[in-house]
Length: 595
Image 1 (tube, rainbow, N blue to C red):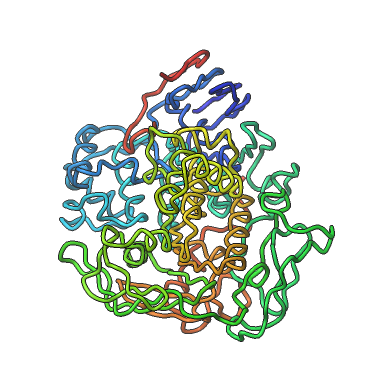
Image 2: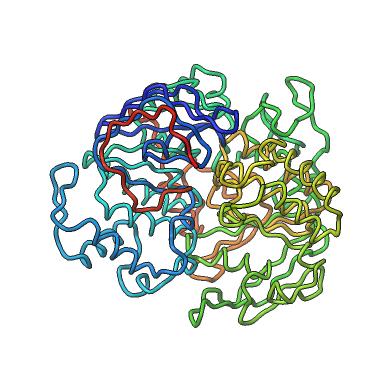
């Protein structure tokens, strides 16, 4: 049983959580949803008896049993200098065989057997191939599954899952959701913090919608998601991107966030040029970033994908790459024109991130070349000229790992303008604050250290930092994975705006098919480090009778996620370390402050 009454969290004179209350019984799922910075993670950490430095908690938090934690950023929960097998053995050793598991089961068997069992449940191989690897040798999705395995070894009675499917491909997402559902069936209570409304729809019994730290709506999941009462909840639901683009002519619906409108034409026709400065047909006003108007941006709306392609900006030729002696990319070639978007799609571990890191100079290829405007770039970042570093920027999936926790966000973002654009510190800071404002972060947020921002806010700060270099190629590695639907729509509009204004070329890595549908002109599907399908039509199949049907002949990556994506027509009525648990307690939190 979890019981929270009047929970309040304050820091620096501001209120992070304002009087939130809820209860959760064993074997049930409560979902906390809301925008980045709405208080979800603060509430989740309070259930563990944790809080960020400087945060003062008040109210009542009662938890019976042991609580496990799945963090939003798996890399932050994994020790970078310890092999996966050693950590799994340590966690399994702390939770000895014979311990009771909710539902009446007992944890028996050797440590090795238990580790093998949990690795199979999260779809990681149980051999030495996993045990001897370090965290950085796993892809983002594999890291998340490793964290889940560590947590399962603790046999928790309750789990706080903070964005557990962030950055996952659709197949892995289904597997993670199935694993969590299995734990719930065993009697474990699950508190789900998520922006993914499909996952919420699949798992949750009860939903609490947060805005600015307050619960603006709560109730059974079926009622809240199907018949929302509060305007903010309706906006969150309306802003969801469709996984499959509509067919035929597209007219933006009233309230949709868009910055230009396409006309009828196929994705590859090259005959349709988007109209700049389009207005909302229902209001007559222009579309503004984070204006509060949110809808479903269409496949063609707000995108230059139908414009006549420009000259080739980025050319990758015969790229082969290895991790140590293991090949991970095999003779990959691709090219992207100026102002266009190439999407790299595939399961976790398929080579997407390695390919993108080679483009940015963060992983030196064993063979092949990366050309920018026809000129070869050095394989290693350390050998690239300053102007080449500025021209190709990378936005990392794990924003927390890319920021120094001891310096303010504004200082770190402005350093990009000093280092890569040669601006003086004052001008660089002004430019940084302006760019942070464009991605929806005000001066107050910019003045905080990274630990003072939510995952979604820090993702936007990372995007602002990269854009401040005035890049010609922007590599986006799951940059919307931690964003709520409304904020996500605004960020995508900003990227489209930059494509039109400056010819920015995008290399997009995403498991979110709605984001791919929204931005991509060309799709490359990777599997096992090889290109298995590509083209303008690799994603834009002809819609079938069901939105989940893949087009005939598409690679299995698209055939499986469509049926596997968590979705239900009738919904069910400092970062803690992964594997950490908290014993049962009844705690009154008045006046507790971080140091």
